[in-house]
Length: 123
Length: 108
Image (cartoon, rainbow over all chains, first blue to last red; front, side, top):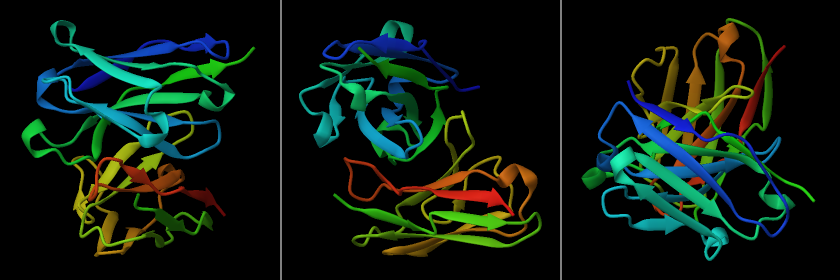
């Protein structure tokens, strides 16, 4: 069965960087885009970006350009999201989520989600 | 970017009620519209994709419709486990992916 298991909660000071990992199992990691979505406390869903685990190609939401980096390690079926220069506005639960469509026919809707990683930014 | 607007923002209903949530896109997105359910403290769950296709394992009381800019999610007979927040999402013009602001469905 498809599973996405994320790393644990993080507490960071303003200006620091944070990295969240997402380990995939139950399917061929390189066959599906991986997306990252965040949710601030009490707020809605916000798309951060996506990575092609096969090529490493990425697309980022404009508001995160220059601060976010998505990478992957194919040998361990794990995707990573690093967010730099964090502020209190980055306090949120960060989710990884798999694209429903296979990589050559991506659908950009999200059928499997990780459990979420709470990132708290506080001085 | 395409803006997605849901209505209502919140809704109170009773078990057994028929409920409809609407989602409007700022420009035509064809049928590239998905619906998600999110319960407190949990990740979202895909319910519907391409406007009306039911995701595997989702009960048939959930249905979706619409085309272009106006879409609906209908729950034919509310069950206790359906009280949650629902989000629409467009996947027509990507990136970026855009979500609606959510509709909170509460027990009356």
